[in-house]
Image (cartoon, rainbow, N blue to C red; front, side, top):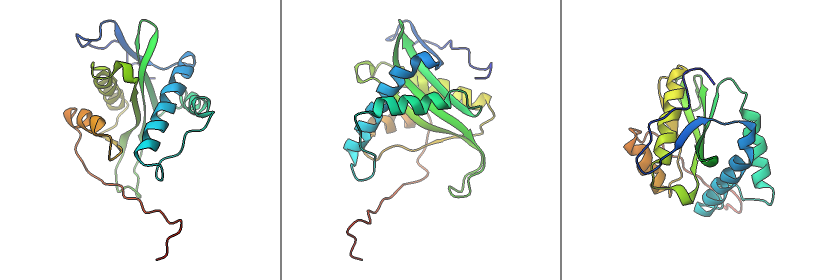
Length: 178
């Protein structure tokens, strides 16, 4: 992490003692649990589009994010309250992407908050801290993708100033007669 993110964040009144800070290897079990939640929820939205959870999804996701922690262009932040990880974000700074017709940008890959702690400002704090860190790393914009059916996340992103720019469409080819 750069020195731009200090881990200190303004606290919403409904989340006393909440801190947003860079993730560490000690957070990996919680990150794996939350990442597995992300997989299960998205698979529930559209089981043909999103990967299915497997018995080791928590460990696999934790291992994946653990490998990202030291990457220079990656940001993994956690929201923590009294030693408990309530949510995390995973983002990166990417260069020009001709496939996406996009210039350099921060890309938000994951934002997850434990369901028991939603609707209290945790997601908003994580999102704001992640955007600030991406800006500090030189990102001129932040882009993200969200599941079509994830209306709660879409409202959070819209309130934070994000606008719709692309729509992903999927066509399954198994058994396609055309």
